[in-house]
Amino acid sequence: MAQRRVGRFRQVLDSAVEALDAKVDALRRRLYEIDSGDRTVIHGDLTLDNILTNGDGALTAVLDWGFFTTEGDPAFDAAVAASIFDMYGESALNTELGLRANRGAAGLFA
Image 1 (cartoon, rainbow, N blue to C red):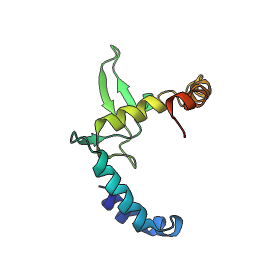
Image 2 (tube, rainbow, N blue to C red):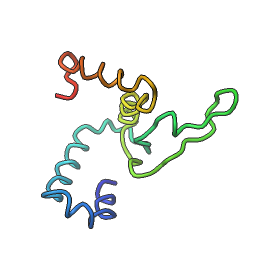
Image 3 (cartoon, one colour):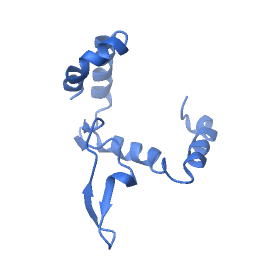
């Protein structure tokens, strides 16, 4: 999947990313190293704005299957969703500041 994306966007990436092929190779090796074997299609941008529900709150659709959609471990999708869950809400800044304040203890953003 990564190789296909690079092929699709190579014209832009070549001029913007130094040593693109080496970085893609390193990324592919690391992805295989951490692969849990539990692979599926992941959304990559699963926020409340991309989830539609009916009047009872039941899921009816997931929108915006765009650039971040790929194959991978569903735990990655859950981690991204948890980290960006409130990025458009009133308390988004407080959520971000809380994560940054705890980065030493949790090893985040190190």
